Image 1 (cartoon, rainbow, N blue to C red):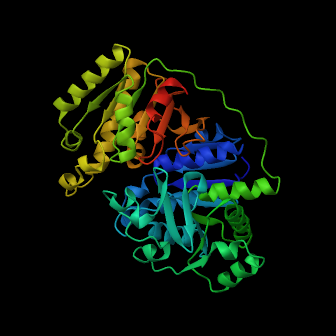
Image 2: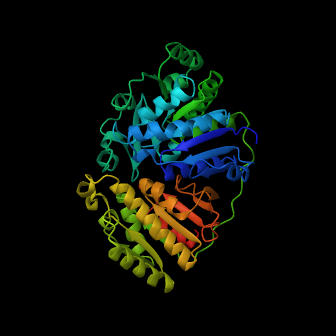
Image 3: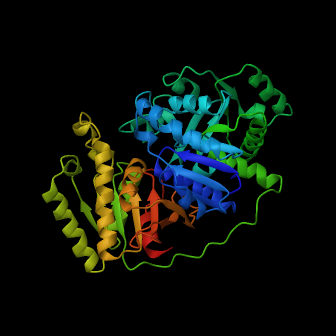
Length: 441
């Protein structure tokens, strides 16, 4: 197998499919594995030019990262790809205790040769922007500084209280962070400015991305950094969007692929562990448009309340048997989040994701479903592992709601092999997202 162009590890599942989608749209064949693949699994996708590993580090501790990220990064390095990317959420929510981006950067820098680590977070396609190192994100048509964002400033686990990404990372790492801002990126001396920064051997180099011009300029510098031995990068799917913008300018992208439309599904099953107000609106819309919405107390998963789990399973199976799509949700917006009640219980949030995944797996298998959805970034990471799926490829990108493609599942179990599955982050999609997936629109 020839060396891939790019390898990446996503710190949650929806973020990993976000990268898969952005690459698929450019014509770069991509496979996303749910764990380090066996040689046999890897051989099935020998034509893939990009290889991803979907992880869970966004919801894990630094100690967990020390143990689990090191072998993954070593595996990525052994592939010999030109670019190796640790993918984080474009809202950058993280802390020193949970999902530490700083610790991941330290591990990657050590594995890949103690060279400066490029950091790219802005992605205009996702309505995420960085200017002078400050992160901005859109919400319902308005752009907010991330520490004033109506959702991310109140994230139940890792609220963003600092917009300057360099200051935000100071709590997570002792690595120094240099900045090549958007004015320097688009100036005539951008190469010299970056080279001067590299002479100081910074731990990370943050590249602003504010618009199409700075995105292409950042992609050019990522290529130059790779030439300089800085093959390992950290950032959102803005890394791939930046590279693609540069490759497009230089005529290095293949012809854009065509994807067949989905067509409607008679019925689908959705499980949601998201507390986002975006997902709340989507649940309400689905409930008003033919779905059977079923509320479920997530504490039943944490406490292994088998009677409650069996009851919600029966209710979902009855609705599906009657030909209705179902949507099982553990929250309706941030006000209903029960995080404070389960915060002291180790592994509680992971248990919710696993519980929803097991519930979804049972419904797909017993009812013969061929299309399904999992909502919530952290939820998806732990839920998909219950479906015995070892790889995903892109079935249909959704450019108007980027970061939430429909994927094809690859499994040794016929019940899951070929399943069309969408994995949606909490902040992603319009109000009609679930209905659109059902209707194939």
